[in-house]
Structure formats: C-alpha cells, structure tokens
Image (cartoon, rainbow, N blue to C red; front, side, top):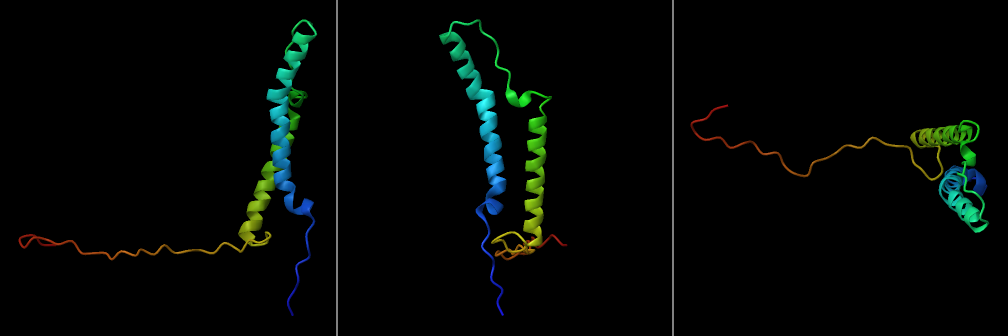
Amino acid sequence: MVEEKKPEDWMQKKWRPAMGWTYMIICVLDMAVFPVIWSLAQMITKQPLSQWMPLTLQGAGLFHIAMGAVLGIAAFGRTQEKIAGTANNIEPAKPTAIVSTTAIKKPVLAEDQSL
C-alpha cells in the first residue's frame, strides 16, 4: 500500500522565505526610503529639518533582535529537516565518495637513483 502525501498549505510551505522578504522590505523602507520621503516632505512644507528616527530601532532595536531570532531558528530548523530527510521534496543526505578518473603513475627514476 502506497501512502499518499497530503497537499500542504502554501503558508506552511513558504513561511520562511516570506519572513525573510518581509524583514528585508521593512529594513529597506525604514532605513532608506522613509528618511528620503521625510526630508522631502519637510523641504516641501518649509518646516525646520529634523532627522528621521527609524521606527524599527525604537525600543533598543528589539524588532531586529526578534526577527534575527525567528529567521535564525527557522534556518536552523530547515537545516535539521534536510539532514533528517523530512523536508519536502528533499532526499536524505547520503555520503559520497570522490573517485579519481586519472591513474596514479609511479615516478620514473634514473638508473643511478634508488628508492
């Protein structure tokens, strides 16, 4: 009897990459895009310039610490799944041997030399 695999929900399968992309987008917006928009808005409205304070660095950067922990543990878990062979569409890692296709030749010695 062949056991059928149950179709997995896309969220269960793709949550790790989604977390990584989400974190990257948040960092790019908070560190690059929003400061430029903030400065342009102040120049257009002719208000005194003030520096953009990144939202993700508020509260001692707890957001970055938390996201680093989530992504780090997710990567570790994925590695363990691959090693154990329980990851989707991944076969367990098998040891491989490196085989040389060239023959090993003995050095040719001159007649007056000996081993």
